Image 1 (cartoon, one colour):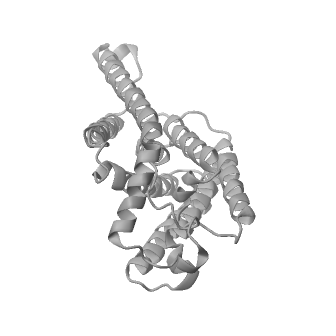
Image 2 (cartoon, rainbow, N blue to C red; image 1 turned 90 degrees about the vertical axis):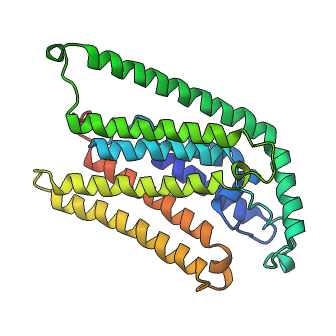
Length: 295
């Protein structure tokens, strides 16, 4: 239930910031609260949730793999801030106006410069730790596989393939982040402008996959009450997908107006994090009497 508590803490901190702002202004994205007094809770919450996703075992290797990758990506989202941070700092009368290219470039460059040292320290620390974990995982895998099969109860072939793909993707992500970070000093680089959004979108995709895999696991199980859990997990996954399609699609097609148009990203992020809390609560109830899975 620690993950649910962290989500509640983040929600309360954001609500408190909105309630105490002069005109109850809501940022255009949840990530924009990085630049408010909510920053310690925002960063800490994403790091804690990401860490929990990695260390907690999914009931199948597919679910576990999706959670591992989602957790890694959420940590990147926490440490590399968005550049959409000026909404509530602007006078209310001009918040909806689109800044000219030069003004936006100046604002973006100022944000990048102001946070460069913090991003450098935290992101390089993450790269170092992930590289160390990948190395140790590879060594442990080689040692385990080199032992006589009669002395250990190893994973199934399907799980071996799954984890090879999982850690291969994690290694590829590390290489990608390492290479793209080399251009971090350039204010126009993809690292400063794209890494946050790319990582957030992929993290959401892997979270949805994890929920889908949980539903599929229940669908193929032998438990008497499995049907209701298929419906529970399936409903959470379907709601996540529906929210992403409707809100993001509507935003790109200019179907919304007013507050929803200005805060489509915030609305979607809030819904998805709330549904993640629902999923984790369902897992806690469903799996409270089970030990570590074997596959």
